[in-house]
Image 1 (tube, one colour):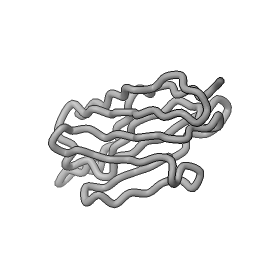
Image 2 (tube, one colour; image 1 turned 120 degrees about the vertical axis):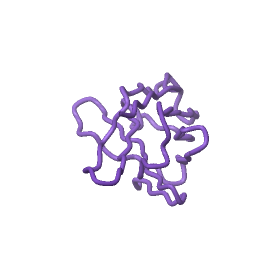
Image 3 (spheres, one colour; image 1 turned 135 degrees about the horizontal axis):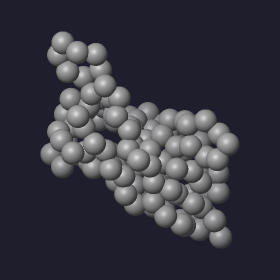
Length: 120
């Protein structure tokens, strides 16, 4: 069982920056991909960015060039650096990971979420 704990959310003005961090309770080497989702009030949860062990990453179009995802397998962390934040980035951000183990179906893990509010 893996636990994912997010931190780093908060209130920021438009144009500002925040860094979200997700710490896993165990090794993330077998968790592939890891990523960040977000859910705004009244909207469905959407994928923001994901990253694989090899370092390849994907982003939703609306955050490309502003957000950067990174993972550190030695520290068991996945971070999301967010710049040039917009009001429409306001949401609860969730850390996500899919763990693969031999002989069993993959397991999905979610963090509890951290609120990001972009407002003046």
